[in-house]
Image 1 (spheres, one colour):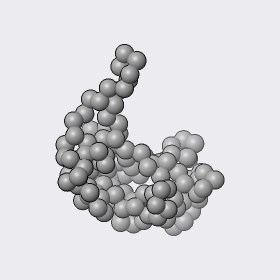
Image 2: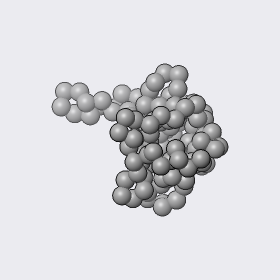
Image 3: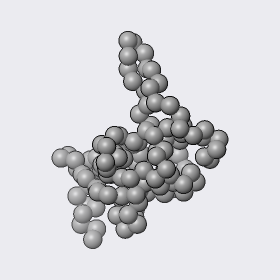
Image 4: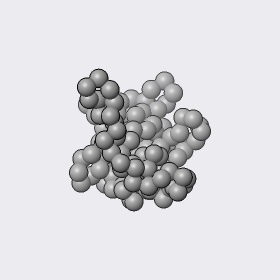
Length: 126
């Protein structure tokens, strides 16, 4: 089963960027990193599991917040160096700021404008 993992072009640190996308709406929810183990476990457990570079360990999305990402599909891009996870975001919050998506700022008139509201105060989540 590791042959499919060998097709991924891992960077020098053994990581690949992974984009989580809502499987129904197509909205980009977040970007994180995966190592071989994280990608393998994601498929095995049918939920998003990432590799935390700051903590140097696996991170099961939602392990603290309860906002689990249920896996629907895994895609590999044409260069084999980016993963897209089609997920169902349990609880509707993917971002540690309490928003649906980590991509909540839009470039408008020379500045970044926050366009998405906080759905839940992060203090109540973590």
